[in-house]
Length: 146
Image 1 (cartoon, rainbow, N blue to C red):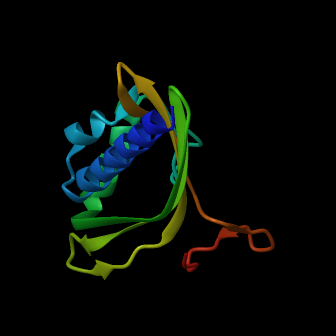
Image 2 (cartoon, rainbow, N blue to C red):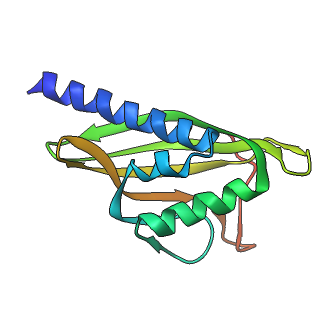
């Protein structure tokens, strides 16, 4: 059983690598293959939730309209793997060069991924991205580093 868990953890890591690659290549169809059709995404921009792979891809398409080149970095990924569900959390940062030529280092966010094993493939069934909140000001804290 531990060997199977290690294999599943490796496969999930490969899926996460494909997410990074898909974002950096602005490859919407490649990203589509990484999500369940009914994925629920709690992303940083409104509305509160995006339901379904098409809604998730509209989010990525909107992001890609701002960038000429995109880079995505994950740090401190931790995975917990079960038989057919798994979850992971990490810090993520989207950065790159905007269409107007401005370079941006982006900001670090907290990312959670929930996977479901469907027909032997680990797909993202839920993801959430957030930033810490300064309660007094009601504003997100965007300058923290992992």
